[in-house]
Length: 148
Image (cartoon, rainbow, N blue to C red; front, side):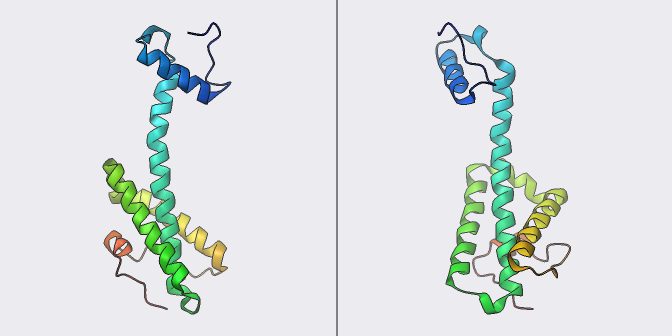
């Protein structure tokens, strides 16, 4: 072990590498337990953020598809397919995230994020207050919202 251990606050990457070396060496007494616990919790938060972000982008794309039919194209189709695969991948890699899909508060936040993206990208302000689609519809590769 080095004479001057790296602190969590000074360089988190060097600190993480040092903590991993200590773990592998069985030096449990030298571990920074509190910060290790924080970092483990942050891994879960990162996965949750990725799912929320992908779903919000997907919802924004579906809104744009529905509200701007004149701008539809292959690029939007590809991007919608990519986001659907990304959401599926998040849920496959971290199945415990599926619990969020039944949480109305989570959906409200994701919908608000998606509408925010759509408003910013379209300059339209006519979107529904609540998501009009089910999760199954959103994820169905055959689902393309009809123009309004």
